[in-house]
Amino acid sequence: MKGVIYAILGGVFLTLQGTANAFIGEKIGTWQAAALTQGTGFVAALLLVWMVGDKSWKNVKKVKPAYLLGGAFAAFILFSNITAFHRNGAALTVSAVLIAQILVTLILEKRGFFASVSPRLRTSQWVGVGLMVIGILCLTL
Image (cartoon, rainbow, N blue to C red; front, side, top):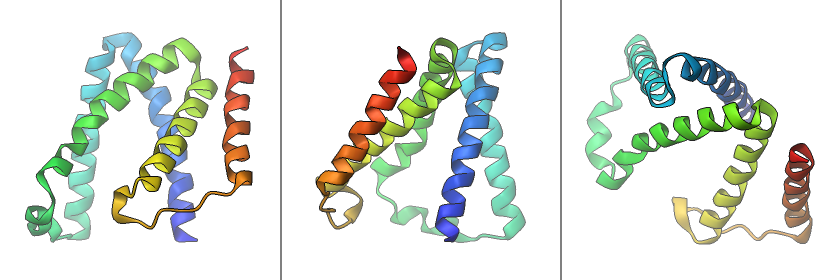
């Protein structure tokens, strides 16, 4: 249950961040807004790590170097979201992001990424994803 609560909070904060970034991007530029957001996020995360006294930094050597570049994706995520918010609005952007995340996650899991067991998707689950895509199309028309 705790994981679901964190997922909901993540969705709430992702939407709030996207809206704030769109407004910041209008004033200072999209890449500048992405840099500002990553900078403040970095500071906030460091403060939280320091406040809770987490000492797991020493485990960073166990992470594959390619995965350490994952944070660089955030710049492109922010740029894409800010640009999409300006062009599409919040509802369409968040919906499209959600569907893209679901589809890519399903593909990666089917291919065995994330060291997880490949899920067997039933027809009803594919119909659900299809209905979500139709919902996006309805938002754009």
